[in-house]
Length: 305
Image 1 (tube, rainbow, N blue to C red):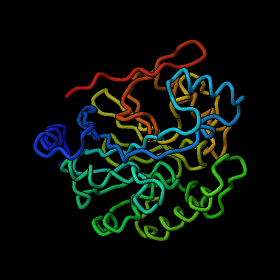
Image 2 (image 1 turned 90 degrees about the vertical axis):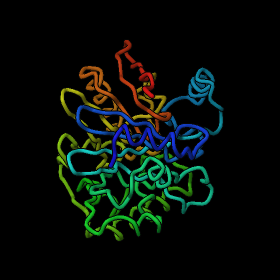
Image 3 (image 1 turned 45 degrees about the vertical axis):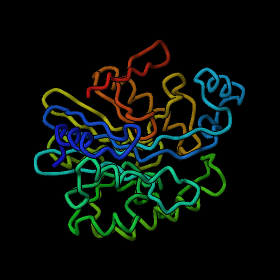
Image 4 (image 1 turned 90 degrees about the horizontal axis):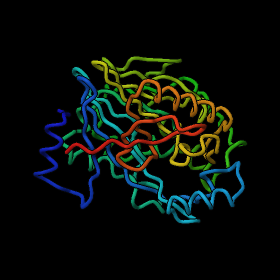
């Protein structure tokens, strides 16, 4: 069973990492866990494709980040609500050469005392390979329940039947792998998909809603219980977005819409003061958003341990 208490206890009894790789918290009556799937290296040029490279270089230097390549954090979540155990995204998987530090979530979930066999639902924010690839690993496929429900937006499924990469700026080898992985995911799990249109309550207090932008079917997940809330924003924002919300990421299939979605979510979070977790913010990616003039300010929580 997923709970703050038992995940913390397991961490004491059986440490499997030299650095923390999971962070447990409660959102009202919902137990939640952020799990690091590791990191993957990407060219820094993908972080902002619509600005002068000199401006990006200046920001990277300001943030003490390397100029050419950076480690992109990969975060997934698990949540327990009522009698359901929900996995939110599934990381990259270990089947992609060149990314040896990614694909860590299955063993880290086990180390936290959460069994894949107990997962009743999986929510997919979008079908990029670093969000569905983990479900294609044999040891994950073999352990998931035959009746597991996998929730994904109808617009996302439709998009990947004939994906458009014309507005992306990705490394050349990436689009074919994205297309192949999305197709493999759909073929593997098509009978277990629970496709929704705009908004769907997966479990008490756990709702997935369509945003679009990053991909046409990109969605975010809200955990709301007893007046507390957390939004898992998938790929709606990246570290540079707080200072420069209008800087567009090379993996965005509709950069203009992605900008609109990002700013809207930032304003929503600043107003409701809820917690934010995102797939590619530095682990554990738990914090709040504050307005800061024309930009936004990231306010990480103080770890509770």
